[in-house]
Length: 89
Image 1 (cartoon, rainbow, N blue to C red):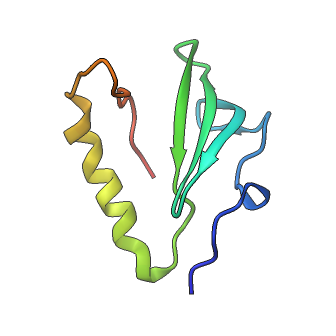
Image 2 (image 1 turned 120 degrees about the vertical axis):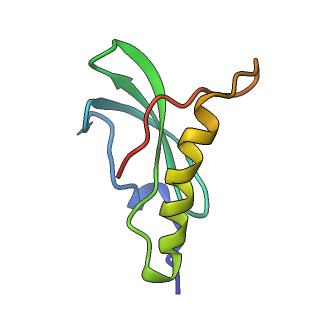
């Protein structure tokens, strides 16, 4: 059984450093991911950071699908779409 995501169980907190990002705020969460406002310290810009916590084995394909979406979304440009800058595990 999957445990629902909640702000209280968010893996990152305001002020945490995650890779090259400084976490500024939790913007929201859904069924499988948390979205944070973060600061890219290397490029000095504000970004949205989507984090998928380590899912149970039954949802491992979620991580694989997310990794595959990065290259597909990288080249899309529309006024109302966010840009993808980085993907990783």
